[in-house]
Picture 1 (cartoon, rainbow, N blue to C red):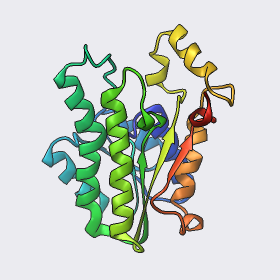
Picture 2 (cartoon, rainbow, N blue to C red):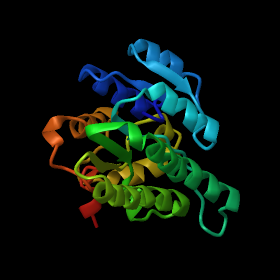
Picture 3 (cartoon, rainbow, N blue to C red):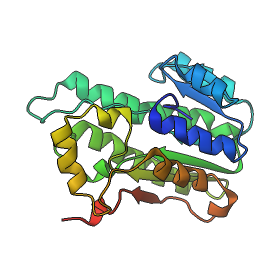
Length: 226
């Protein structure tokens, strides 16, 4: 799993470990080694925007891979008139291109019935001030749906699309902005890492064997709100 040192990634790792998966946790943040040690997993510090980073993860994964969770992501929000080309490119490179590179590199190692889960976002439908982020998350959906057709029935590929989740990334938002966004969620609250981790863990189970090419919007009803 990538993006494993963060609040959401850490909880997903815990749920997968509890389900009996042997984990390789990946992040650019060296703290991933501490997180991995706490879960009895292997931690890999790697920059997935570089070929050597992808190679390190593939080698650590071994010859048989049952689950891949592409969770790494960043934001560089701005109005389009203020968004620099560098910030647009950085978000696409980390959120989308790195996930594509790693997924394709691991394809020969996926076992029969393997599950790929791409962490998309409700922002894939379009968010003000997030043209780069929305594009990256929509790209993950399209990429995953294409792979679901190419790789069926051996490998399943799905996406989970949360709305706001209580993580350090969200907590860094100005309180008044966060409050306005939460007010738009029909469920009446921000999501928790547990809300999302449970869905990812389910998609990794044999119980989800007939689910592929899908996007699960875990957004408290935000997609149907006015």
